[in-house]
Image (tube, rainbow, N blue to C red; front, side):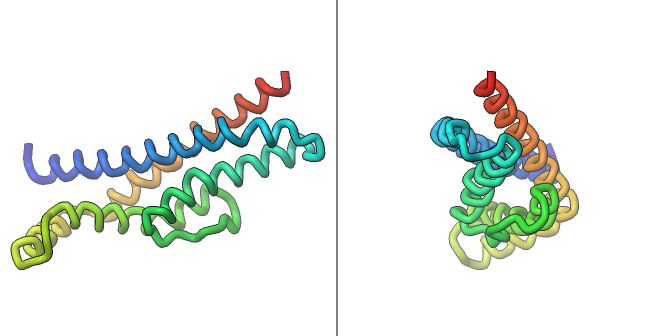
Length: 154
């Protein structure tokens, strides 16, 4: 396996870890709080789903990334897809810093390894992989949320 293939494996693991952490947070949020939303008779069904969607996104994606120190927008101004696209570079930068930290203590040799790492990384590819993974994760979480609300309505 060459350096590029090893790097792709590491990038895949870092992105996978993000998706796993977001998924765990989302499932925990839904288990703890979805029943409260569903029991709230003051919320219209459409409003309920929109509110639950935004709170789920905040609790799973934004809070996870903010807790990692990723400098993301802390609110969704337009829609979630636009937010993901706009904040992917920040996610990638944070993951790259994480990878750099794993190369060793600060010093000349570590700096040389960081330079090698940056030569191998194609940021546009890393960003595309990160964005696709987060988008797919979010689609799966939205589907889970919709299923939970439909089952509760029955």
